[in-house]
Image 1 (tube, one colour):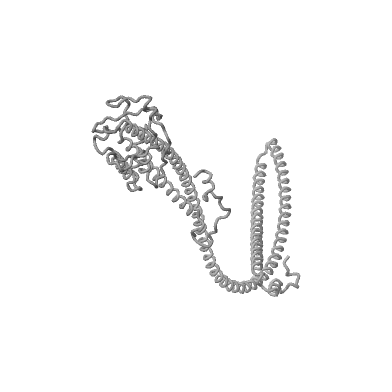
Image 2 (tube, rainbow, N blue to C red):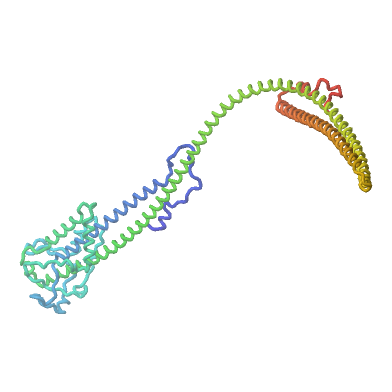
Length: 495
């Protein structure tokens, strides 16, 4: 098979654009798989290769049997050896007809044994069913084949031993050995080579002399005919050998080509096997994905059932919580209104406290200013008195009297101590009053901040409750909850 036939084989067809779907079956076996065609092609190739090998071995066995036949047959001797008379050119001109035109004598004569030419021997060895090409029966003159001159064999009762290293066809001994090995390995033919060898041996034994003195009884003309017949047989065997070698080379080329094709088919099979494995992996992956999807669907169904039951329970619990929130909203609205009223009262009282604190602080500052002015005036008067007293002391010292000055100085010190003690007592009392007023104002500020934080917290709670329950509370309930009962009185409304 050539590369063109390989490319046109069904294995090299283009791949289809779409793969067969595997949705209807898990790991489905495809009916139109190319692996079956590959196996059939491989079996056919193996059968053809075995047939060719069998034919080659059969032909090699036939060739081997022909070589044995030629080796066992008598060989021509050169002219002039022993008792053979030399052949003259005149005798060559009187050469008998070639072996193709030779007719064996009739069987009526009992003194001579019938003989066959090489063509009949080869045809007998090959058999009617053999495909071995036999040489044509052409007319050749004796002495034309390689210039070999015939001789007369010696009338010796012993035969010359056949040399295993020298053949008339000049075939190397290694080729003969390979042919013998192939013939021995041919187990399919059932001993066909041995039967051919037996047939060749029988034909040679039948063609041999009936008595040891038969060769000596032949005339030179008969010996010439026998040698010409044998040389024609050698030529035919050479031609058959060349044809067999040609067929062997052709068969070897076919075997190598088939081997390459088998390798290509193996590569195709490997590629198809890998592709099949890839498709099987894809199918398995899709099956796993489908199984995962089914598992997820089952889980989703179970979750849907559980969520439905949970929705029912959540609905009932939400309705119950809505009713509770409505009640808590009403309570919170009442508390909010109460807190707002308390906040208004606290705000008014805080405003009064702040105003009173501001008035007290202003009066205290005014009193402190007046007292500071009074203290400054008294200090200035005391300083003036001190300066006057100092001048008086200087004058007294200058005049020499010191008793009165000392007396006045003691009185001055006593007065200063009394004034200082009075100022200190008054300052402590004022400081206590200021501290008390500061503490009262700080306490009032803390109370106001606490009330403001509490009010903002209550407002945030009210807004959160209203936003959570506004979707489920009727509008009438919302209006009732958001409208205070004393909304008409502007004095109690939050600012």
